[in-house]
Length: 312
Picture 1: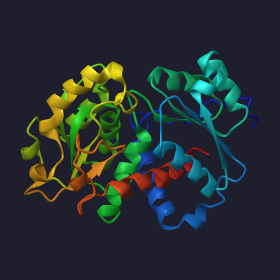
Picture 2 (picture 1 turned 90 degrees about the vertical axis):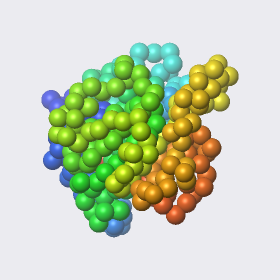
Picture 3 (picture 1 turned 90 degrees about the horizontal axis):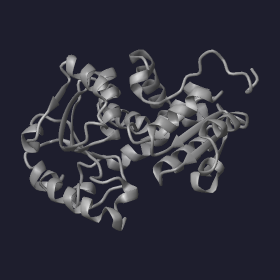
């Protein structure tokens, strides 16, 4: 099929709420297979190109997608939003152009509306590499990490997220529904305009969502505890956000993941990174024996390889 001819339906990844339960579960199985035997898949995307568009800063997203395309026999192009004509031209026009040069587009952008606009015109699959509302690639890596820790099946796991209700939470909520994972949210800081109420309601209706402001009590019986930065990474060291940073620290410090909070709990520790040690999590816990943070971060590679193969 010519890249210039848009088929009736292209499968994109905006968030897991738009995928069927069966497709998500099959994707996890594929990710597990890829991690167990990378050589089986090493030429699967031979001569295919992924364009990686970055408006937001990144370490894990860039490295894992680029290394992943290489491992699968393809090629990845890093495109900095600020060094491209995305800063000048129409997003939809630029996305149409990219579609004629690649097999996939991965967009890590600030506004979900921008990545959605790309899906409306692109003639190749578009992958949401992170936006203000969703972080689906991270969520699949999270479930892959839990699955590995539980012998391959994440179903029935009890996960507690302690932190800001953000894009990571939205995608956790949507993917937990597909695997019957019990999710407890301890989120004293939330912006209702960011919360995906549809996904939240679906998980709540299945009896798999609990919300609390008692972090200690929430850890009773938990298998995993997960946290994230209290302020978006691009704003953490920005003087313009200094007052907001201090406000959040004051509000959130009682919810820090530390040895006192974890005393009496057997929960393993997760964080999507980058970490601000001494804020949402202490260095002792992040690098402690119960931390599975680096397994979780490595799993971005395997989860995204599965996404790329599925969309190819």
